Amino acid sequence: MGSRILSVESLSVKYRANPREIHALRDVSIGLERGSSLGVVGGSGSGKTTLCLSVMRLLPKNAVVESGRILLDGVDLLSLSEEEMRSVRGKRVSMIFQNPHTSLNPTATVEQHLLEVYELKLGMGAGEARQSAREVLREAGIDHPQDVLSKYPHQLSGGLAQRVLIALAIAQSPEVLIADEPTSALDAVATSRITSLLKKLCDRRGMSLVMVSHDLRTVLGLVDEVVVMLFGQVVERAPADRLLKRPLHPYTKLLVSAYRDVFWRGVVIRNGLPSNRGGCVFLESCPHPLDVCREASPPLFEAGCGAVRCFAYAR
Ligand SMILES: Nc1ncnc2c1ncn2[C@@H]1O[C@H](COP(=O)(O)OP(=O)(O)OP(=O)(O)O)[C@@H](O)[C@H]1O
Ligand SMILES: [Mg+2]
Image (cartoon, rainbow, N blue to C red; front, side, top):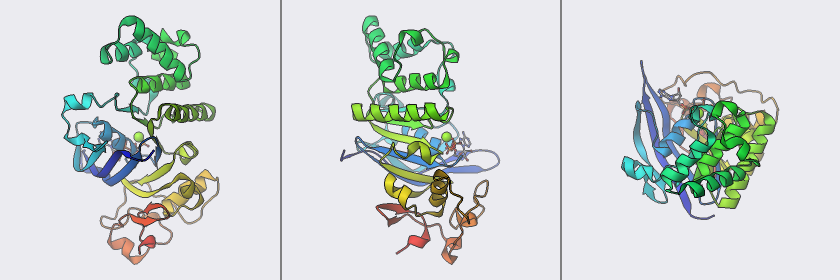
């Protein structure tokens, strides 16, 4: 732990879409220390996947990076050529995509997927590649790799497919692993197995982890720090234990009360994007808005070992 391996600084990304543009990320900053883990939590459409795809430089064609920097060990990934990025993707930063089955090629077996990495990307000979494929599957918690290697993606259960994706993601020993909702298609037992596997892998390999989820339950107990996203903004950043004990932003309070299975009176999240242009994105749902919240978008205020985007914490 100590030095920062990944920093996203003031990143703004929009999508060109008819009839209007969608501002998916607005001035988003996150930081990941080497060997540590960060949870990114937020509702559907809050910009989590856009953030991950930005780091991987895999945004769709209609996306525009308006401003910001993405520093991997001090080097701005946004300034690299496509060829330079190819030596970053998978090798230094790897991503587990949101849907396990659509991330795998339906016409290739598990073994073919892994051999492509070991033979084509890492240049191993056939024997060494086969051996490495078995070992990485074992590391991903598949005790009998020979039963899985010849299978096609549609023959795998959700949990097994996710383990294969994890094996593919760690095959090139990346320094940073980004897991975008790796458990959203799984039941509670499989979810807990996959999250503990990720924790074990990160501890064993010294890998840094960005764990994305719409559910606080999935990240607490796994990560050191959490950022909460709402409508493309980071509204709170805090150590995981502080976030759970003392959430500051009203939206985070709502997430924590849902986590504790407690009904928190006063907040009803409106659907869709916020209607107000200049004010706080949470204004229409906030139980205690101030006058200033209608007029200006709050910056992140330092608070409680972290930061919160709420004028109630302005000093
Ligand atoms: N290719 C695209 N073209 C246009 N708009 C897009 C595109 N991809 C995402 N968006 C929009 O950008 C916003 C952020 O989407 P994103 O997928 O990053 O959210 P998310 O937090 O990952 O959501 P989920 O929890 O549903 O996966 C949403 O309003 C979404 O509709
Ligand atoms: Mg997503």
